[in-house]
Structures are given as structure tokens and as C-alpha cells.
Image (cartoon, rainbow, N blue to C red; front, side, top):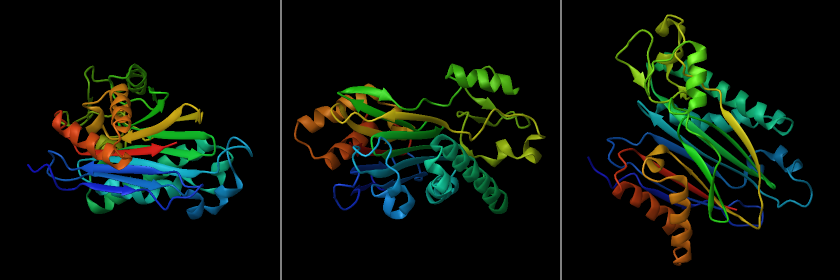
Length: 298
């Protein structure tokens, strides 16, 4: 399998005082195909003008509106592609400014329904782990389902903004057991096809696990409801956010990734060189998955 193609890099957008700057890089790695997709928008208020009337944190907050998301596909790229097109529009309705968490949940579930309908019409069975981070004024708003993660560097210490939705997560294991399908191992087992398993407990898509006709209406433990979080940005100590798929987190702990970024920046590497280098290092360390990394500068 080739390891070099499917690499991308781009400084986010034209720089201005209202731009949230980001850098990204991705590799197909040791997989046959690239199933990851991502979205970067450092001037979100231009796409969604109603946001400009709302600046979390009050009048003294920095004027910034950004959204950054990674969609880690499995079983194909159809659903990660759909998520990249539809998740933000589904979240960013006018009600977003009234209740971000509810808007995030509504957006994830609406996208999941679109994904399931697409899958039924196109014989697609893929799914996607999803993480999205909004940088709005002096606040971070995070929503995720699956094992793609977001990490904040706060004065060099890693603050995990998300947690993996797998059976290794005690809270998720308890939920799955309560819902009526607990296999006792580290993977969900399909209630009808016992040779079919899944390492995630939350994802968008995966029609084989959600369509009642394909599960005999039995619980599978897989849901698309996101976990959400809000975090105040402290400009004096908060430095950057890393948003990445598990192809990076399989070989870097959150603290290792933050330290690696800071070390490279202190050595004089430009931010784009840093993300390129970290993705390449993940491959060298043995990552066997697609690798996608976005670094958001605060």
C-alpha cells in the first residue's frame, strides 16, 4: 500500500483581525483509500451572517467566528463526504444563538437521518466519526460522536475537549448496557449478524446498525447523539487546538501531541510545517489509518 499521496495543506483563509487562523494536513497513510473529510472556515460569519449579531463573551471579546471539523469515515467515504457538506448547515440555523448545545444535537441527528436515507437509496453502509469545534468570541463550543478528538493546549498542558465513544469508555459501556446490547468485549456486536462488529458506540450513518429492518428492531448500542462541551478561551494561556482523527491519536496521546507541536514551534518551524511534520511522524510511529489534523491558532 502506498503511503505518500492524498496529502493536503492550506493556510485557512485570508488573514484579518476577524479570521480564526488554522493549518491542516492529511495523509491516506497505509489504507487503500482516503475516507477522511474535513471542513475549515475561519470566517464563519460571512457564510452565516446572523452570527455577526452574536459574540459569546460580550462586547469585549475578540471578534472571531470559526468552525473546524474532522469526519473520519469507516467502511467507505460516502457518509464522511455527506457530513462535510451537511453538518454545519444543519447545526447553524437561527436557533443556534439561543441554545448551542440543542442546535448541535439537532444538527447531528438531522445529518444522521440524511445519511441513513442516502444509504438506503444508494446501497451504502459506511459511517463517520465526527468532531466539530466552533471558536466564537471568547468561547469554544464542541460537539462530537466517535473517536475523532479535539485537544486544547493551555499553557502547554493538554485539555481534552472530547472523549472517545467506545466500549473502553465506562460511561459509554454503561449506556450501551442500559440500552440492551452489551457484548462484554471492546466492540459492539450486531444483533442479527454476529460476525459483524463495530469499534465505536456513536457515529453518523452505519445504516446496518440503525435501520430497524436490518436489526430486527433490536438495540445495537450505536447512536448519533453528540456529546457537547463549552469552554471559555483564556487568551493569556490558550494557544491552539488540535482536531484530528484516530489515525493521529492511535500513536500520540493528547499531551504528547501538544508537546510535539510546542517543541516544533519553539524550534522555529512555521505552523504549516508543524502540522505536516506531525502527520508524517504519526505515520512513522506506526499509524495504520488515514491521518487528518487541523491546528487552530487562538
